Length: 334
Image 1 (cartoon, one colour):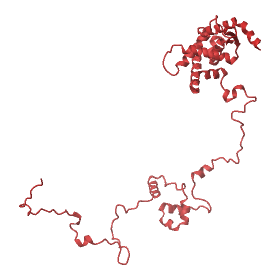
Image 2 (image 1 turned 180 degrees about the horizontal axis):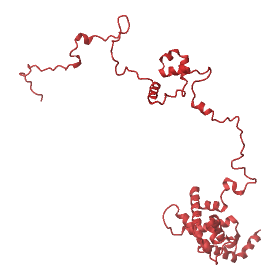
Image 3 (image 1 turned 90 degrees about the vertical axis):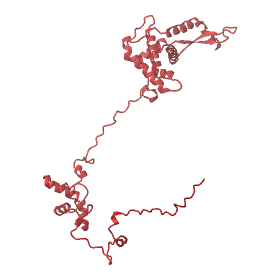
Image 4 (image 1 turned 120 degrees about the vertical axis):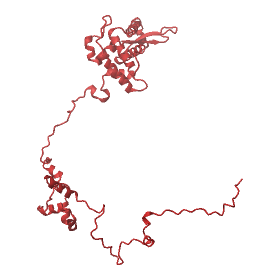
């Protein structure tokens, strides 16, 4: 509901306060406030400047840097600035007469006192000072030193190719260590295995399970980890494998036939046995180098004759000896 109108108070006048004037215009007449400021006379000429009037704060011109440096040098007795370096200001002023009149006094004095011959500059840059110290390549004799590392001798060795730069055993074991195509992980594990073989103590060889003939002493093996690895693999590599021929013995009975293996096949079978035995070992800790350490410990156990790989090799050889009479089955088929 709207409020009621109070008729008794409607005739009372409301107070009006005037806006405060700027104190700067209080003492100035109104005619002068509205008059525009004149900067020129009626003839179009600028107004004359006042006599004996001190310049303002932004009207005083500072001396040139070179003049200030020359004045400081005279006071301290060190001499003026070195005007011989930098851009050819003197040559510019010789062509500009108006610039000579407005130039600083120190440059005017230097221009008057300089009496350089025509066609030369009255200054020297840093490039000109270094020109005397530079060696003229035209006069210098170039001596041919040949190739930096020398040319290789032909024919190239077997390990000079980039794809065959590693030892064959190391390359084969690295490929067998690789899983899911991760070659870099396999190479890192191979490096850890060789490092463990190099830093481990010399093994104690078991005379009942001798290594391959021509093996170096056990105390020399850590000095050459690649030879250490090759010796452990070749010592347990089987000479043959057993192939089963179904129905060859009659009545559906399979016949066991021994088949000889090549060098790479023998090493492949030995590495697979070693990796199977290493995967069954107990882990000593966590980390990405745990499997590599177990493989290295298994290789050391092979050299010492403590690994179960020796029993698997012996079982295959015994089975092959017992089945040597079946070798003639293949000959009869031919």
